[in-house]
Length: 184
Image (cartoon, rainbow, N blue to C red; front, side, top):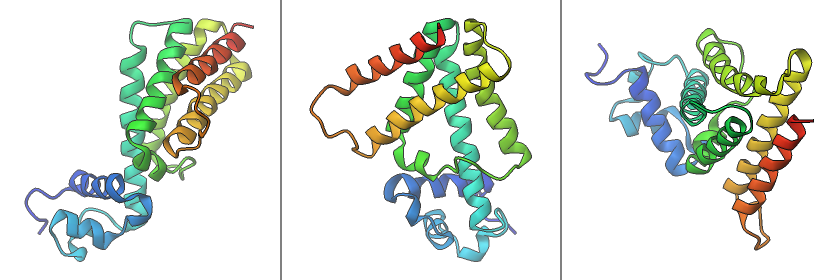
């Protein structure tokens, strides 16, 4: 019988606690079991294996990122919406670098993850429609937006910017370059 209080969400919570504190490489079922206060075999009542747990972490990160971007873009359009998305994306990665690093950037298809990813993509596409883009142009713009925000945030979170110039100024320049390119 599953331990009272332990659930798949509880297992993911324990896993994320480990990832946030020690990084993605520290994620093992035995570490999660210790964090949850159970024996390792007890986890199998809630997750099949470490691969499934990693998928559940990816799902959680996508859901959190979607919520953050959705909140940021609410009531905005055009350049303001794109700016809000890029700032929210960056802040999520900088706030949760290990958690974001644990996310599978190209996960195997799974219905819940596909639905969550579609919601995230829907927010981005809705913001980009203000630029009167459609079809492949819309897809290319979404890729450029994600790549810009992702790349900068990953470099920042990993300490990849060694020069003394202000990161806020650099990111605002990147946002200006992206929005300017979208208005072409």
